[in-house]
Length: 432
Ligand SMILES: Nc1ncnc2c1ncn2[C@@H]1O[C@H](COP(=O)(O)OP(=O)(O)O)[C@@H](O)[C@H]1O
Ligand SMILES: [Mg+2]
Figure: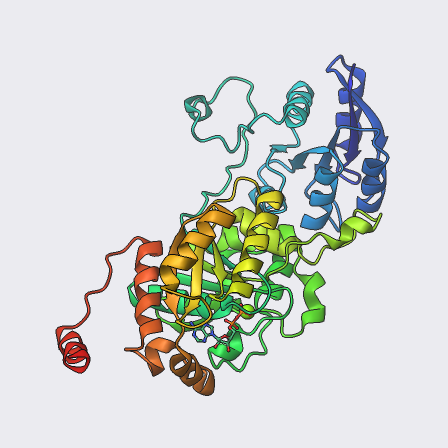
């Protein structure tokens, strides 16, 4: 059966010729609907009558959200750009369209791309691992090159409800990594309202992540724009602040947040993302599948992350919440391998030696080892909160700062800092 295709290329000078040729010749493609705009295309996609869409970079109001909705409706996409329009090709890719061809490509190759897109085959424009991609084969259209993807690693700092210390860990981790010489990007992606700016004493009026997501949604985010939107807190630390008001969460569209992280990977070696706790898909109850999902951004971050930290408190209630949260995570993202960070470790709420007891409980109920323990250290966190400065600045020798620094070294893959001799001698004298 012929592949049923929607087109949304109206206005382009080549439209009539191309659509005619696609339809007329035996390319195994039937154009079932020529859509004039994005809304018509989305409505057609929702009707389930087509498997693929051919759209042009010039299509008005095309954004990442529309692309995500098309894909969500099971419609594979091939983008067309005016020959030589590299910017248009980049924009389409940023919106999530990986297969982009110049509009003067032969109709049979466009039909082939549509079939490949439906089959989910890797797109030639991206597959740099395939040596054939380097050979200019006869008749192969010149595909505008996909930009090289960045190398930075994304660490998502997530955890259950109950304020286990996600933000404290995210800020500490980013600050310490930057002090160890790692170029670091801290992103506040808490969809229930971000406080990273406040913790760092930034008088924040900037659009931050929401602004970056807006540009990403329209396909116009690039490194320069991301740098403009972020605060340069220290030479190696940039910060993209979060939502100043929790009710602005619809501005953090999942696809756009993913694109922001992709761009951040090109700017920094380590990207630390402060996430919300919730993974629940409350919108499952709603029949409007296109409704924005509050927790979608959190899932997008966890899905994109190279490392997911699950920050847990160190008392029985907090641990139980973490076990449940880890269950939810397994259900939402079965491939994620979260690293458990037990924060606020202290004697008292858990009988016996808290490290051993907690490690045993986490292993038994969540099937995970504890990756890191961080001590309860109210003096240090209070000093930091009171001054809007980081632990390294206000409590450089505190136990929490020391633990965060060695965790940052491990996660960033740099040598652990040597404690300076004088302070370790002093500690020994004190202890003795
Ligand atoms: N290791 C710790 N020792 C003492 N207090 C901590 C520690 N970690 C976090 N806190 C405090 O706990 C509270 C909640 O931390 P926060 O990082 O905002 O949690 P979350 O982001 O998970 O909601 C804050 O007042 C913070 O200073
Ligand atoms: Mg927080």
